[in-house]
Length: 355
Image 1 (cartoon, rainbow, N blue to C red):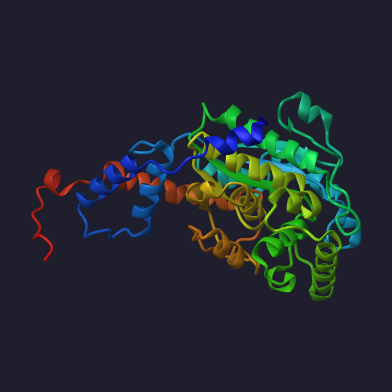
Image 2 (cartoon, helix red, strand yellow):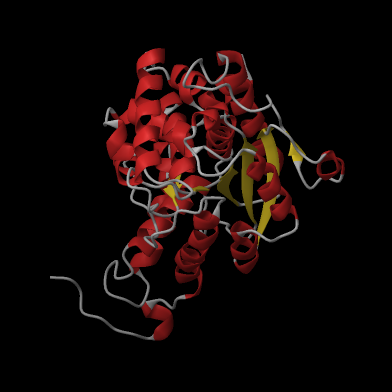
């Protein structure tokens, strides 16, 4: 069996005993029943994922996957593909949004090349950029499939292998991405999976105007029609209209779930990777934690398909893993509530029983 198949077979449900123990603990805390709402829900889910309570969350890694896209040639993005390499270099210097928010929330940021057109080889030699490259950017999905099915599997498995390599040293993963033009494949994938019109899912990405956005819609619609993607076959969708860094996000989600690690899925692009993960393995659904609701207009439809309610609503749309970094605050809150809040017994608080 391949690493992908082995990993899918390893993903089982949440641990019921750990969840029950966490619920019982929460009911003893000095507050009305479930008064901290989704913090309580999150604590239970984290315990179910980790199969222990309290769940460990102190060691956290945000993995930023980088890749380029041939469809940029169609004029769907405001920026050229060169900016991918420039932003990756900025991240290695600690200058990007994910770096500063990750540092604030005690997360180690890892950068990995899954499909960049070009890169600084010195960054690879120094270990600042992990070499997981499958190809020098995807093909132009407006004209041909984005990648072969074999390369799609390879990129996913590279993401799984990275999750497995980090699993012994980190308790929580966050997904991030960097790739000029990647809202186009993410939108195409979301449209195929949800069955929703491309126009309902398409947003400005990195800041395109109405005219270019209408062109982007047409490019995506034509690509879906051209390739006749099969929504019941995740690998078919990915290979025809996907992206290498989206493959990698899927791999990190699957690899994290197989090692019982919570994965904070970032915004629009990362959610496309999460959709692929769920298409390949429905059992991964309970392991998904959507860090925030992206300001991209189609993200609400992606969340509905995933059946997951985002943790934060901050109108963010930067990507990179910034939403995952910010959601770590809420993860800390859920576990701190569980571990440090007094119980009625320890605080000497007497309450009337429920009627």
